[in-house]
Length: 530
View (cartoon, helix red, strand yellow):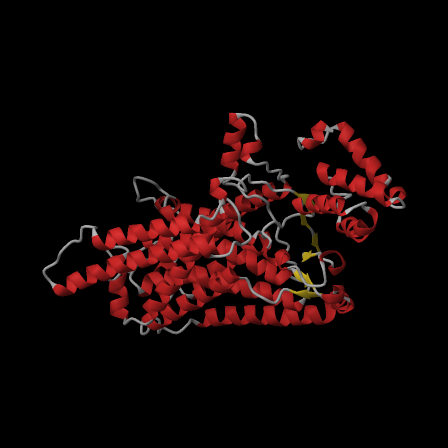
């Protein structure tokens, strides 16, 4: 049994597990013996015995079979120490007979969801300084910093009053943002992501809110003022961009080039955007955790490039660049590696122990590094064709993510931000970090259910705050593009583009209507029965 406590399944442990499962029905006639067995199973982490039904039965008999209040409280504490994470057809299995008549908000807000198993996550922070909020201390230090900056920080003096006013506004805005981010870090509620620390994800949420506020401000500026305002982030901005096309010479073989007879292929392959494409699709796959959705986004983006190539010069690419370098090289390799990482975390067994409970220094060091890895991992099963509602929710997510990717190029064009500017990296960093959170909350909105009075289940009706914010940011980006891009995108779409999208629209709408009307009747019947 010592091996069991250490997390290793020895031969004795497997024998005990088999015997315990076989003896379950016999022991059920004796409540005390069964409760003892389940206590041992919870301690050893046997998922076959610690299922929802068994825990439910113990809760029902607990008040009758345990001798006194002290024994009942001790057993309840043992149950509560374990985080029951159950997934039944992508639904949270929560019975009101066990947990009360009201839906447990913690099932939606609880960060510990993953595969069906009983898991105890101990980050060892409950009794440590880092695990405490320290809101008063942090607030006091923040105000000291602001007071020192306001009254004692050296300020550059300008002869021009307008320049002095602009410099003062910039300093005030900087410290206002610092105050806002500190407030978000200390006071925003925790979400589903824990590692490396909830503070990190609260800070990223605050940055996402600041980005949305920046977009709203740009929306109310004149176009020239908005372009000049971008100099705040990069002094080299505010200049009109030259048009760059990647389709000026689409030859594969270039015999006149002495350096390389395949100069065009070489130049494309060595372009730094190849690496950015590769890593971008790794992160994208980790966000959606679906090979089908990732490939759909990949192919659709190449269609977007063809669609808007008459508006954006850098969307003009050679055919072999679209097909081989983008879809089947950079995108495919990124999606493959991203899904491999997802599968690795799905199959991995997470058994976290607090740093203070590890006896040796090397173990503590490994545990400290593990703090920067996920505490648990949930595989997304989007079940796209389960119902028409689920299908259109996933299509909506694909549309929103596509708009987010397209906005990168249109924003650069209308605000005069070159591809080499770090502003693009800042935006993508905020989007990919906060966007992964938003996709997770959207998955919960699409897939999870909550239990109400009488055990009836209903879908989660409230969209998570970060998913809501992500949609708001995408919409605001589109509004900024529409306002500051007036007069830039006037050339009509070519006829072949209209034909392609008409066929795609007819296929998606018509095909889904036929499928969910005539070929998906069992799913509809099952939904009605539930």
